[in-house]
Every structure is written in C-alpha cells, then in structure tokens.
Image (cartoon, rainbow, N blue to C red; front, side, top):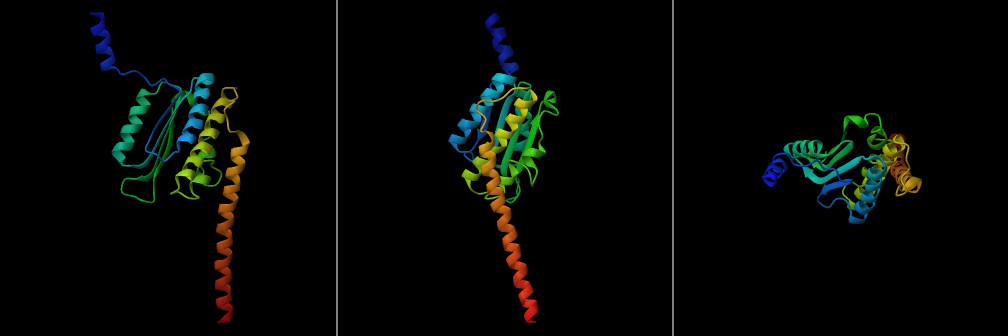
Length: 201
C-alpha cells in the first residue's frame, strides 16, 4: 500500500530540480564550453546551494518560451538562476530572446546590466561581433556565465576555483576594442569620402 501511495505522490507532484547545473539546447554552445560551464555551475552549487539553468536554442516561438520559463521556474529548487536565450524569436530573423530570471532570495545578488548591457555587458559585447558563429556564441556564454557565477559566489562570500578569472575577460575586451575600432574606422572612411566629394563640387 505504501508503495502505491509513494507512486501516486511522485506522479502527481514531480520532484524539484535540485541538481547543480542544467542545460537544454540544440547545439549552439560547444561541448567543451558546456563542460567548463558545468564545472563552474557545480562548484557554485556545492559552495552556495545555487542552481543554474541555461536554455539556449536556435529559435523559440512565444508558446515555447513561456512553457520553458514556467516549467523551470516551477521545477528548479531555490535559490536558482534561469537563463533563456534564442538566436531568433517568433517570426523575426533579426531578434532573439535573452532573458534571465531568478528566485526571490537572489534579489540584488548579481548585476544583470554587467552581463547584458549593450556596451559593458560581458555577454552582449561579444555576441554582437558575429552572431552566426557557434564558436563566438560559445565564447560569449562562457564569458557571461563566468561573470554570473563569480558575482553570485562573491555575494555569498566564497571564491570559485573553477572560475576563468580575468584572463577570459581580457580576451573579450580585446574583441570588443577591435570590433568598435573597426566601426569607427569605417565611419571615418565614409565621412572622409563624402567630404572629398563635396570638396570637388
């Protein structure tokens, strides 16, 4: 009898996801990157009890996004951070989803702007360089996730041995400087060309 009661409860109330690092995706993050992210996520969980979940898809429609969000927010055991990303969203080919959610007990524990701000975001400033390349996408996720777990660990007064540290951030900053430097260079050439045309007239 006890067996059937237990079975009924398990079927009616699925268990919370209490493991360290969760990932659901379709290949836009490289395996070696996921391995490193899992290492950091597992250590964060061991030292703070914070679970992390990343959903990274090539495409999501509105219903899929809402279902994923609802499912993980119900199943993740607090404290948790849920990150949902897609390269494209609904019928748009130039706009995707990039949103982060957390349990109430993590309010103020990390700075989302430091990850997603257009200019200083550790994730955003690399993902814009070449949105189509999986290696760049992987590097952006590694960079953003590393900053996230470091901020969370710091808020709990612990340090992660698996953290990628400042070396990875320096590499990303070099990419950022090169990217915006190229934009400024082409703007300079554009206005220089226009100025010469006006001068000839």
